[in-house]
Image (tube, rainbow, N blue to C red; front, side, top):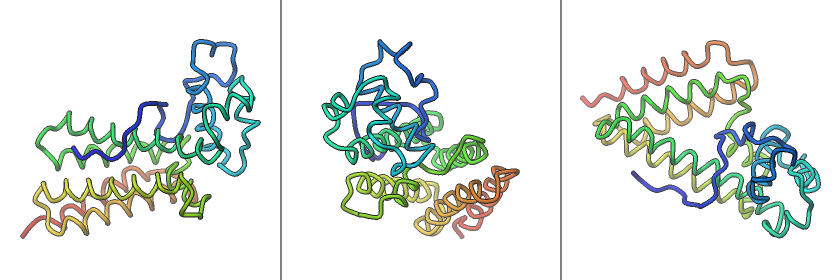
Length: 216
């Protein structure tokens, strides 16, 4: 399995959601401040947007203060980047789960990915890809979060192309692009005109694309 990104801190939620962590200190005393700040920031950035959320709001929601936040993260930019690293790590773990569930079967791993993505785009809480959303909000390519986005997206596309190649599919690079663009388009569609029936259509179109790439 190709290693995409590494890191030590984990905050669950592919969509930068932290619903399992209450946003107050009442039941949070056993959660380390850094983890609490990451969970709260990820949730707020995803639901409200990166630029709309300030460090004061994050510190207050995490039941701490700006001094503590800056002790763990030198800037808001670095906090954003670390939140996105959590999302990227979860993406790596997802592919590892597919590989563990379907060892030596790249076609089944691709199908498992498509099935899970179809479920995600039809989730009523889904607000698109957190990494893509961040890229839109942060046009400066020197921003530390942009580097996280680009490295992960390129690595994921490379891994998908390798799976297509291992599955014996014709023009694996092109197929990886087609599947990737299909998913990105589905995520935008879910936000713009709704997700009714979207998951089923995503799977049907993806399977048609794969079938068209059966090696002659």
